[in-house]
Length: 154
Image (cartoon, rainbow, N blue to C red; front, side):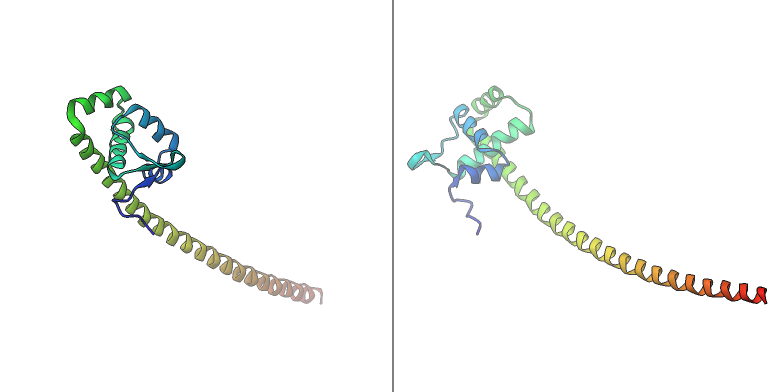
């Protein structure tokens, strides 16, 4: 069952959403004060929806736009958190669209593999038919050659 968009996420869930390992998220927490997950018993992190949006924005700026950490910090200082969350929401939505497209592509790929398996089965069946037909032809040719040789011998 999928969580609602407003649900808190563990570090592994956040990492999965962002396609990032947990150590990257922990590192970004140390560099960006805008990311402040709630820490529960034993230091377990829970990211709020806004934390996730900020993470999407930071990923977009670092990985998508090629900015440095210092560059992203400067960007936040100059443009504010509102602009950062706008970028994060757009990046999150793009990922959602791509996951939907990937889901469709996975279905098409599955269907193509089924077709390929069906073709292999047809090919195997047809090859068996051809082999049987060739064997029959060989027997008839061998028989006719034997008859021809016996006719010539007589």
